[in-house]
Image 1 (cartoon, rainbow, N blue to C red):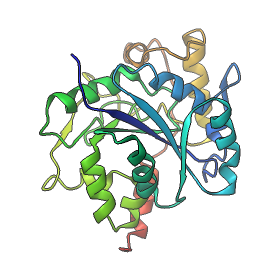
Image 2: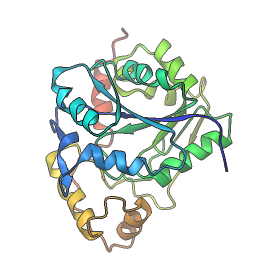
Image 3: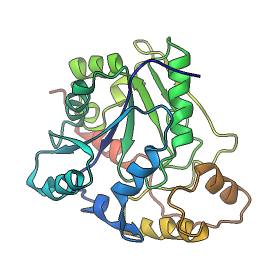
Image 4: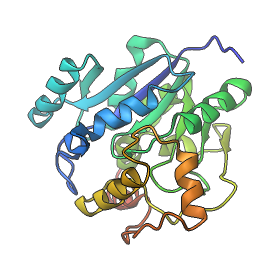
Length: 256
């Protein structure tokens, strides 16, 4: 099915992570940095027209910007704390209809899952926001959020809570009275698993998966999920609360 609307993936990335500083440039496999693995994987999407990395104006991100320049990736530098603003300003030059939100700590972001979400929102014009995160059934790290530029613009113009500004989409998915939301699910609930990198200890899971699949950085998520669900691929999971950063930021919710 062909779609005429422009789709932009916005990858939020910075080097000043509190839990694992500089992780986005950490060599994951065969000297491929985490950010490069993610960008390579999402570039396989059939529906994404453009990709921009939204990083910050902080001096700590100069190294990331230099890497992006050297590898010919689009980038935008904006606010450290107001990520919603950074997202919006990074998006506007591309005049997109649809935004795909990508977080740069998820090495196995999957183009097939991304395309399913994009196809859903493009096929159903009534939807403002499509994700697999409202009712999580995929492992953390395979989360995907796709939303209209109009929804992003509305959030940018109206969001005031610190958690909304820091995490981009809560203003949208917490307001079903304003936005039409759709959540898709996995056939089997594997939400207890983590395929993300929040802490250095999470690297072990990434290495184990890549070694299992002979270093294939493009291994489809469905292959990983199949091996997990059958017990063929056993993962030691760290005890981290899902969406820990967002939950912590709720404590700072004083309207700006």
